[in-house]
Structures are given as structure tokens and as C-alpha cells.
Length: 353
Image (cartoon, rainbow, N blue to C red):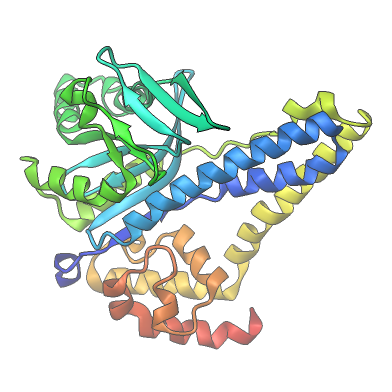
């Protein structure tokens, strides 16, 4: 188990491209809208692109943290009619950080009663407006996680143990992803102030909070199981982003045609490649290699790479160990251990891809 002892790099168990797909759908719809519809959809695309930029800033910090942790990006949970869209779950050897990303224009202030006020300057005028509390939003995510992980247990002893573990390990963070945003929390409580961090302070916050925690340190295997338990709860949700713009269609009879075209494109671009990859000899060969290595080392196959990482590996087809590190889940330690053999397998299929 020496490989686990040398674990010192972050591993993404799940990455996300859902917002990029949403933008593609909206851009495909734009030519069919009237001028007012085009104005609205362009503004929506702009906000989406800004949101993606914020999450990319967080992703960059996490990937370059050189800290042992498992990361899930864009997790959707459902339970008893409730739902939660969580930006990031970050699992260290002691704690799980529930991250809410806020990429805001302007500066942010929290009042003494916990209200969030955004201040923006536009055309020489200063505008102040209240925004929905990201602390409250994140707490609702955690409340649903608790319901799923703790409250649904019927055995009192298991429920008590699950509750103790949950309360001891869950840490909420609101990350201000715009590096230009100034945060003023002088008038609020320490509890609220401690939950809001700038993106450039995120890794320091995680490290300091992790080091201060008195929770027992888990092995890489246990941390992976912990993260995987939430990934198993994630639900892929198909959303139709075009309905909002139906009233702006130049020719309303085109609505269903356009929507069906976008849906067909979505199926072609997202679902079909998954099936094709799973049926290829390369996918089967890499899966066979993973199984063989897991047996040799007495570990679970997905510790080497999970199916999502396997697909990313085939999509990117790295030519050397340096390029392999750009594949999701492949840090320097894993590349050093498995890289040469994986590249050899890829080379056997390179001309056939």
C-alpha cells in the first residue's frame, strides 16, 4: 500500500461540462428569435459564461493545490421532493468541504443581521442591491445531504454514528470566484465571516481547516469510498433550456422543430459517444488492465481510474506521460506508477481511434 502512503495530489472523480452544453443549445436557438429574444438570450449566455469562468477559477486552484483530496464537480441530489445542485464537494483525509461558487460583479458586504449586499458602479453611478444569501443556499444543500446520509437511517445506533461523522466532517464554504471582488464582513458574525473566502485564499483555508480538525485521518481508500458514496447519489438531469424563449420565436411553428433539433444534437454529442467508447476494444483493454492491476495490488479498480476518467483518457489519447497528467484523475504519482503501461496500450490503438 505504499502508493496510498505517497498520495499528495488532488483527484477529480467527477468534472462537469453541463453549462458549456447549455450555452451551445442557447446559441443554436438564438437565430430563430426576434430582437427582444436575442437581447435576452445573449444576456443569459453572458451570465452563463461568467459563471463558468468562476467555477474554472476554483477548478484551477483545486487542481494546483498539491494536496491529497478527492473532488466532485456539479453534483445534483434529490430526496423526498427536495433537490440540491452543489458546485463542488472536496474530500480531504478528515473533512468534506461543500463549496458554493459566487462569481459576482462588484463588491460584497454582509450586514450585522446577515443580509448580503452587492455594490456595483455603472456609468458613474453606484448601485446597492440585496442578493439571496449564499450561506443560506449552501446550508440547504447540507440539510439535504444530512437527510440522505443520516435521517433516512432507521437503526438508531447507525443513525447516531452517521450523524456524529456528518456533523464532525462537513464544512461549508462560499467562494468568491471573482478576484476583483472586495468582501466586507466587519459587521457580521464570525460564523458567517469564516464561511466566505476569496478564490485565491481557498487552498490556504482548506489546508488550515484540515490541519485544525481533530477528526481522525482516513486512508486514501476510505476517502475515495466517501467521495464515491456521494457520486453514486448524483442524478443526471435532462433540462430543456429553450422553453423560456418560446414567446420570442419569430415563427412559433419553428419552436418544436428547433427544440427537437437541439435535443437530437444533444443525444448525438453526449449520449452516443459514451456508448461507442464502451464498445471499443481500447475501452475493454484499459478496463482489463485496470482489473488486473487492482487484483495485483488488492485495491478496488476505480482507485486506479474510474469509468469517467477512462473515457477522458480515450478522448484525449495522451502520447506521453506529460500529456497523461492532463487527463482527469492522473496526478504525478499515478502517472509514475501506471503511465508507461497505459501509454503502451494507447499506442497499440492510436491509428485505429
